[in-house]
Image (cartoon, rainbow, N blue to C red):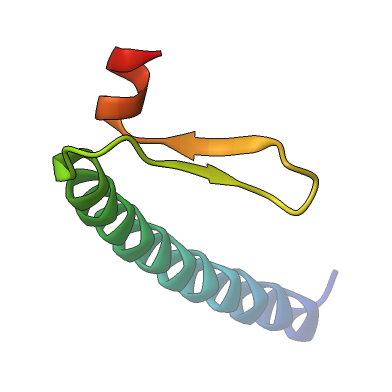
Length: 68
């Protein structure tokens, strides 16, 4: 392995680290948004459930879960 190979590897590692940091930041944003939306949905006092196109329940709020 010569100096050029080492330099390319170092650059690639730096690039991957930057991409990883950006993805971790995006994950944190999505978690925050999910937490906010979950609190809004759970704050609704009416029973609420979400079903997909195959009629599988994908989510339900606290009022629904407490009743059923």
